[in-house]
Length: 124
Image (tube, rainbow, N blue to C red; front, side, top):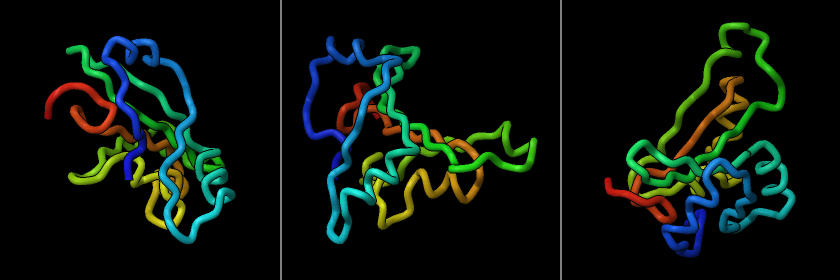
């Protein structure tokens, strides 16, 4: 299941750098629209350009309430998905997902697809 199901010209990718936009992961069995609305209400998507000019899809997810620990408030989790998956796999309501990790650890989680996958440019 791919987060993005279209190809975009390399020249158009620069227009998305630093801008927020909506994503719609492919729905899986036994899920409702409400499941996705609730999950994606704590997800922000953006594109970053690396120092060598590659584009990466990235998401930020945050917990529903702030941590009580001052130390934890200053930390984030940087998540890169394992091989043979994409970021959309970790935005599914019935599986371990990025908003769930943010909730468990009470901190923001930033996730990204690796260079060369789906929408991202560059090489692995």
